[in-house]
Length: 400
Image (tube, rainbow, N blue to C red):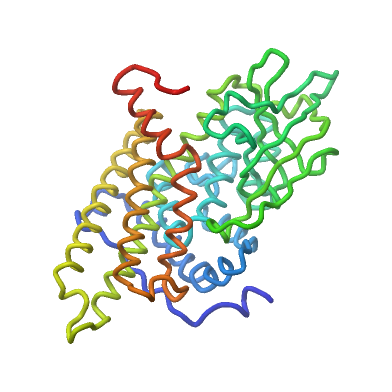
């Protein structure tokens, strides 16, 4: 059944919440980008997302729309298919997409931060011109191959490897939990060379020995397509090696870019849950009063908007640091960890305000809550980010 037929008549009533007038800190370009993406989400995502999540299907037709609204690489140069905007604009766009659904934001942030960014940052001019415009326009879909079945939080333990064979590298190994992989045209893959040094390669789906089976049975990110990457003696031309980086700093640099986007994105999920709970509290009656008139409901809502406001300020300040080239990986980790945890707590409180209705698809709460259970783990788990902050403030490495 086409996505057009399945569109619901339900109207997306979302209104933005800005308790500390943070909009005054944003430029006109930031606000225009936010409005454009919000309108697109209301028109194209909200009417269909519950149906796709219910069916555990990915609305792949939205890739083109994401490209048209500039969601792929918003802060990369326009000449390479990006949006030519700053890092705050990138964050705001991720916020609005995740307000619609974490899976839709994942589709965009993987394409921009984990595929386009490393090709731009670590690739050569020939690679940039060959791949980036097609990725930016949505003609090509990309994925990022780092996590392995046995190596998630410890990427340095990867076993995927390349062997020099004349004008090609022979690639063998497997990657797991890869967003977009079953529909991707190219994959940015990280593998160890004969010296154990991690290198990045651009692998194309039509290369013999490449496969990307889909992972089924997810209770989270159900509207996002996730899979494996399997490489069996894949012959990758040496021209596809990313020449300008080696070692773990390559993939970790990409993850910093993605984690930054998540710190903003999680705000969107939290805002959507709060917005729905606030509206419900003003409409629903119990014991002859609106829910919002009860002290305990007001306590929940007051705490929710307080935590959202703190997270908004954290994201905005991180964005200003990123624009100045001063945002450290540890600062990004703090924001990612705090904001995703905040969003999860707000989803749970919002579910309670909605009562039994909160578990139904009539409201977005449970979908956001289930999605955030993935977001709190991917791009660095909740506890890993805590240890990154701990190492940063003490100088001691508690990993391993």
